[in-house]
Image (tube, rainbow, N blue to C red; front, side, top):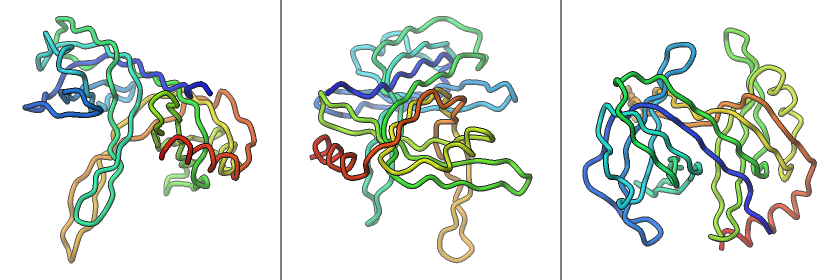
Length: 220
Protein backbone atom coordinates (compact mmCIF):
# COMPACT_ATOMS: atom_id res chain seq x y z
CA UNK A 1 0.00 0.00 0.00
CA UNK A 2 1.24 3.49 -0.78
CA UNK A 3 0.97 6.52 1.49
CA UNK A 4 -1.95 8.86 0.91
CA UNK A 5 -0.74 12.14 -0.54
CA UNK A 6 -0.23 14.82 2.09
CA UNK A 7 1.90 17.64 0.65
CA UNK A 8 2.23 21.11 2.15
CA UNK A 9 4.04 24.09 0.62
CA UNK A 10 4.06 27.34 2.57
CA UNK A 11 6.06 30.55 2.43
CA UNK A 12 5.66 33.31 4.98
CA UNK A 13 7.29 35.16 7.83
CA UNK A 14 8.34 33.70 11.19
CA UNK A 15 6.12 35.37 13.80
CA UNK A 16 7.11 33.41 16.91
CA UNK A 17 9.52 30.68 18.03
CA UNK A 18 8.69 28.58 21.07
CA UNK A 19 11.54 28.32 23.57
CA UNK A 20 13.10 24.91 24.04
CA UNK A 21 12.78 21.67 22.11
CA UNK A 22 10.70 18.51 22.50
CA UNK A 23 10.90 14.88 21.42
CA UNK A 24 8.59 13.34 18.80
CA UNK A 25 9.04 9.94 17.11
CA UNK A 26 12.47 9.67 18.73
CA UNK A 27 13.75 12.97 17.29
CA UNK A 28 14.25 16.41 18.86
CA UNK A 29 12.01 19.14 17.38
CA UNK A 30 11.50 22.89 17.59
CA UNK A 31 8.08 24.56 17.12
CA UNK A 32 7.59 27.95 15.48
CA UNK A 33 4.75 29.92 13.86
CA UNK A 34 4.56 31.25 10.30
CA UNK A 35 2.30 34.16 9.34
CA UNK A 36 0.81 34.04 5.82
CA UNK A 37 -1.45 36.80 4.51
CA UNK A 38 -4.70 35.90 2.69
CA UNK A 39 -6.05 37.90 -0.25
CA UNK A 40 -8.58 39.35 2.23
CA UNK A 41 -5.72 40.80 4.26
CA UNK A 42 -6.23 38.47 7.23
CA UNK A 43 -3.16 36.57 8.39
CA UNK A 44 -3.12 32.83 9.10
CA UNK A 45 -0.73 31.95 11.93
CA UNK A 46 0.33 28.33 11.39
CA UNK A 47 2.37 26.07 13.72
CA UNK A 48 5.36 24.28 12.20
CA UNK A 49 7.63 21.67 13.77
CA UNK A 50 11.12 21.02 12.44
CA UNK A 51 13.97 18.77 13.55
CA UNK A 52 16.52 20.65 15.64
CA UNK A 53 19.29 19.90 13.14
CA UNK A 54 17.41 21.98 10.51
CA UNK A 55 16.86 25.10 12.63
CA UNK A 56 19.96 27.08 11.69
CA UNK A 57 19.06 30.62 10.62
CA UNK A 58 15.50 30.61 11.98
CA UNK A 59 14.74 34.05 13.43
CA UNK A 60 11.57 36.02 14.09
CA UNK A 61 10.88 38.37 11.17
CA UNK A 62 12.64 36.23 8.57
CA UNK A 63 10.87 34.66 5.62
CA UNK A 64 10.87 30.89 5.48
CA UNK A 65 9.82 28.33 2.85
CA UNK A 66 8.61 24.96 4.12
CA UNK A 67 7.69 21.72 2.40
CA UNK A 68 6.26 18.91 4.48
CA UNK A 69 3.05 17.22 5.59
CA UNK A 70 0.10 18.20 7.78
CA UNK A 71 0.33 16.09 10.93
CA UNK A 72 -2.17 15.37 13.70
CA UNK A 73 -1.79 13.98 17.21
CA UNK A 74 -3.96 13.66 20.31
CA UNK A 75 -3.23 15.58 23.49
CA UNK A 76 -4.93 14.30 26.63
CA UNK A 77 -5.71 16.99 29.17
CA UNK A 78 -8.17 17.14 32.09
CA UNK A 79 -9.76 13.88 31.01
CA UNK A 80 -10.36 15.12 27.45
CA UNK A 81 -8.61 14.45 24.16
CA UNK A 82 -7.68 17.39 21.91
CA UNK A 83 -6.64 17.14 18.24
CA UNK A 84 -3.30 18.91 17.71
CA UNK A 85 -2.52 19.96 14.13
CA UNK A 86 0.84 21.21 12.88
CA UNK A 87 2.97 21.22 9.75
CA UNK A 88 5.86 18.77 9.99
CA UNK A 89 8.68 20.30 7.95
CA UNK A 90 10.72 18.01 5.71
CA UNK A 91 12.47 20.72 3.67
CA UNK A 92 13.06 24.22 5.01
CA UNK A 93 14.79 27.28 3.58
CA UNK A 94 15.20 30.52 5.49
CA UNK A 95 15.71 33.84 3.68
CA UNK A 96 16.06 37.46 4.70
CA UNK A 97 12.64 38.98 3.94
CA UNK A 98 11.20 42.31 4.99
CA UNK A 99 8.94 41.07 7.79
CA UNK A 100 5.73 41.18 5.73
CA UNK A 101 3.48 38.13 5.71
CA UNK A 102 2.94 37.92 1.94
CA UNK A 103 3.49 34.34 0.83
CA UNK A 104 2.28 30.96 -0.37
CA UNK A 105 -0.09 28.51 1.29
CA UNK A 106 -0.92 25.26 -0.50
CA UNK A 107 -1.85 21.73 0.50
CA UNK A 108 -2.72 18.66 -1.58
CA UNK A 109 -4.42 16.04 0.55
CA UNK A 110 -5.96 12.65 -0.15
CA UNK A 111 -7.54 10.15 2.18
CA UNK A 112 -10.79 8.68 3.40
CA UNK A 113 -13.81 10.34 4.96
CA UNK A 114 -13.96 9.11 8.57
CA UNK A 115 -17.02 11.06 9.78
CA UNK A 116 -20.31 11.96 8.08
CA UNK A 117 -20.10 15.36 6.34
CA UNK A 118 -21.84 18.29 8.06
CA UNK A 119 -23.49 20.70 5.62
CA UNK A 120 -24.96 24.01 6.76
CA UNK A 121 -25.55 27.62 5.85
CA UNK A 122 -24.05 30.47 7.86
CA UNK A 123 -26.24 33.37 9.09
CA UNK A 124 -25.10 35.40 6.06
CA UNK A 125 -26.01 32.60 3.64
CA UNK A 126 -22.63 30.99 2.92
CA UNK A 127 -22.85 27.28 2.12
CA UNK A 128 -20.20 25.24 3.93
CA UNK A 129 -19.55 21.57 4.61
CA UNK A 130 -17.21 20.17 7.27
CA UNK A 131 -15.22 17.04 6.42
CA UNK A 132 -12.78 14.95 8.46
CA UNK A 133 -10.24 13.23 6.20
CA UNK A 134 -8.08 10.36 7.44
CA UNK A 135 -4.74 10.38 5.63
CA UNK A 136 -2.81 7.12 5.97
CA UNK A 137 0.99 7.02 6.27
CA UNK A 138 1.63 3.31 5.84
CA UNK A 139 5.42 3.26 6.26
CA UNK A 140 5.04 4.76 9.77
CA UNK A 141 1.82 2.82 10.44
CA UNK A 142 -0.07 5.95 11.47
CA UNK A 143 -3.00 8.07 10.32
CA UNK A 144 -3.40 11.85 10.34
CA UNK A 145 -6.93 13.17 10.88
CA UNK A 146 -7.38 16.49 9.08
CA UNK A 147 -10.48 18.72 9.44
CA UNK A 148 -11.44 20.35 6.15
CA UNK A 149 -14.10 22.83 5.08
CA UNK A 150 -15.69 23.06 1.62
CA UNK A 151 -17.51 26.11 0.27
CA UNK A 152 -20.44 26.77 -2.08
CA UNK A 153 -20.46 24.30 -5.01
CA UNK A 154 -17.91 22.02 -3.36
CA UNK A 155 -19.95 22.12 -0.13
CA UNK A 156 -23.07 20.91 -1.95
CA UNK A 157 -21.05 18.15 -3.61
CA UNK A 158 -19.36 17.08 -0.37
CA UNK A 159 -22.69 16.96 1.50
CA UNK A 160 -23.46 13.72 -0.38
CA UNK A 161 -20.19 11.96 0.50
CA UNK A 162 -20.26 8.86 2.71
CA UNK A 163 -17.94 7.57 5.42
CA UNK A 164 -15.24 5.50 3.71
CA UNK A 165 -15.26 7.51 0.46
CA UNK A 166 -11.87 8.40 -1.03
CA UNK A 167 -11.33 12.15 -1.46
CA UNK A 168 -8.49 14.19 -2.96
CA UNK A 169 -8.48 17.96 -2.49
CA UNK A 170 -6.32 21.02 -3.03
CA UNK A 171 -6.59 24.00 -0.70
CA UNK A 172 -4.83 26.02 1.98
CA UNK A 173 -4.39 25.75 5.74
CA UNK A 174 -6.15 28.42 7.76
CA UNK A 175 -6.28 29.48 11.40
CA UNK A 176 -9.49 30.69 13.01
CA UNK A 177 -9.99 32.30 16.42
CA UNK A 178 -13.19 31.36 18.23
CA UNK A 179 -14.78 31.77 21.67
CA UNK A 180 -14.98 28.62 23.82
CA UNK A 181 -17.53 28.82 26.62
CA UNK A 182 -16.25 27.34 29.86
CA UNK A 183 -18.05 27.05 33.19
CA UNK A 184 -20.50 29.81 34.09
CA UNK A 185 -19.86 33.04 32.20
CA UNK A 186 -16.20 32.27 31.57
CA UNK A 187 -15.16 32.42 27.90
CA UNK A 188 -11.75 31.55 26.47
CA UNK A 189 -10.24 32.56 23.13
CA UNK A 190 -8.95 29.55 21.21
CA UNK A 191 -7.50 28.90 17.76
CA UNK A 192 -8.79 26.25 15.38
CA UNK A 193 -6.86 24.99 12.36
CA UNK A 194 -8.47 23.51 9.25
CA UNK A 195 -7.95 23.04 5.53
CA UNK A 196 -10.01 25.41 3.40
CA UNK A 197 -10.81 23.42 0.25
CA UNK A 198 -10.25 25.27 -3.01
CA UNK A 199 -11.17 22.34 -5.24
CA UNK A 200 -12.20 18.71 -4.89
CA UNK A 201 -9.94 16.98 -7.40
CA UNK A 202 -11.19 13.42 -7.01
CA UNK A 203 -13.93 11.49 -5.23
CA UNK A 204 -14.61 7.76 -5.21
CA UNK A 205 -17.32 5.96 -3.28
CA UNK A 206 -15.97 3.43 -0.79
CA UNK A 207 -16.96 0.75 1.66
CA UNK A 208 -17.21 1.72 5.33
CA UNK A 209 -16.26 -1.84 6.30
CA UNK A 210 -13.08 -1.82 4.19
CA UNK A 211 -12.21 1.68 5.37
CA UNK A 212 -12.46 0.81 9.06
CA UNK A 213 -10.31 -2.27 8.54
CA UNK A 214 -7.70 -0.20 6.77
CA UNK A 215 -7.58 2.35 9.58
CA UNK A 216 -7.17 -0.37 12.20
CA UNK A 217 -4.25 -1.80 10.27
CA UNK A 218 -2.52 1.59 10.26
CA UNK A 219 -3.36 2.78 13.75
CA UNK A 220 -2.52 -0.21 15.95
